[in-house]
Length: 169
Ligand code: GTP
Ligand code: MG
Image 1: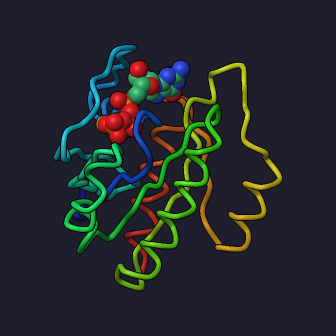
Image 2: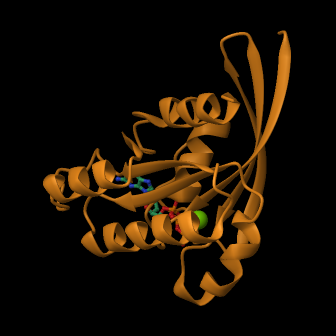
């Protein structure tokens, strides 16, 4: 490999949308039906190859439970990438994800790269209105990816796309 790049990445979104499960799928290629809710935040290093470049991600997986919200700014401070996740079967989580986009855009560095993610797409019920998602994504000029931490669909693509975005400029 020719280069090694290192980036701080944060995962945001309400509780139980599958943030920790996405990290578990990327780093260990595993899935747990009984993943315990994160307390505070969890840190993990994970590497992936993007072409000839080895990219080391320093991942801060935040806790989505409401009571931790006041702490979350500590974890996204200085992040080069933000993964904002919601659950396709839960409209409240979509609303919460929109608020995270606004918060990151207003409080974080202007060149933070955001990926907007709908997870749990293996479930039979996609309850969030797809037109609403499309409208929000277009209006905010976001990269949007559909994932399932359960099947692995879109997970590598998610982190690779973010790595590519962060590597630019
Ligand atoms: P907090 O740590 O509380 O913020 O939650 P989280 O966003 O980290 O969610 P977590 O990864 O703990 O997943 C919550 C639940 O959803 C667990 O029971 C997972 O097994 C389940 N889950 C996560 N991803 C998927 C998915 O892609 N599909 C399905 N069907 N279930 C999922
Ligand atoms: Mg978690």
